[in-house]
Length: 378
Ligand SMILES: Nc1ncnc2c1ncn2[C@@H]1O[C@H](COP(=O)(O)OP(=O)(O)OP(=O)(O)O)[C@@H](O)[C@H]1O
Ligand SMILES: [Mg+2]
Image 1 (spheres, rainbow, N blue to C red):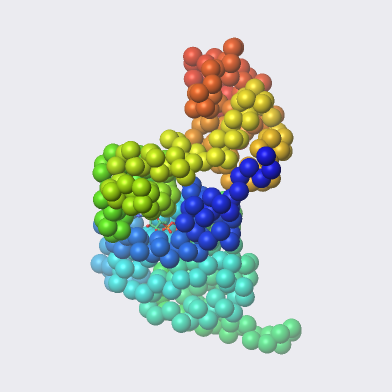
Image 2 (cartoon, rainbow, N blue to C red):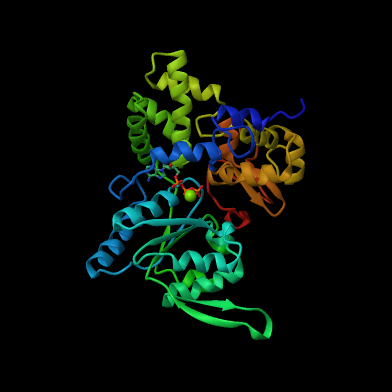
């Protein structure tokens, strides 16, 4: 029973190269290199095409329209939220709505502040500069960015040591669009310089069905409403996962059926790819199963749990737990991981006598949500 969760295998099934195993299994919110290419074909190109995120989309539409009417570059925009929810798509849409070009870079790619200065001084008036993963920008570059964002000016330092001089350099007015999956890691001064902050939310199944219908049309796949509901329900609120599952189900439909994605085809295909009704994969279920069956529902430490499923603790912690916690199946408590009542039910186990333990508190199974909130740290 060694290596029960061969991520490279599931990576292959997920359609990507198995190279970076762990990043590309069926329900990973991250995209691999190959997938990014496929994704660009499915990206919405206007706010009108952009599905869901009603609040962010409406507010952004106003910001852009106001700026267009005034004939000025709009405020700098920060888009924050988990992977795969459409931050890059929105950043590109901002450029196309404004009719300007978008220069793309990322925090980790800007190693020296000189690189950033060069990029900024090459921007044409009104251009959009998109910095992905902006929380990973190096500190000197970040400081340069402050002045650029505020005054459209950068100080270029010439020379070294005591003889070094700073030469101010005007740059064209531009709009910075920053994207981050970790808004909490941004420094205060950087965050404060964004005039608009869009917090992306997970998508409702009905919204994911719209995403799927649009993608199916672009891919030339016949998708029934029931088939799309089946996929949407397992997509963890994430358009990237919905699109990936659609591609996998399409393969199945073409090889094993008549090409149409019906509910039965989607169910059979997703069973084959080990994605269950809630969007849990094999490792997610193994973690819950171990917690419930071996440790009586917990609390148990994450290291022990990881050993029980033959995985590294950080994989369990970083890869499985965020969704299990969000789905209300697992709680992180000061004394260890605890399976919630929903987890017992999802796995088909009868609830333990006396209720489900959450930390030290025992919750009456018939009064769900009756309290242990302070114990949750995620
Ligand atoms: N609102 C949407 N409508 C239609 N498709 C969407 C939407 N949001 C995302 N998608 C699809 O999901 C894919 C991933 O979106 P995108 O790359 O914009 O996410 P992201 O938030 O930038 O992710 P990351 O944090 O990994 O960079 C896109 O290729 C696009 O096809
Ligand atoms: Mg992105």
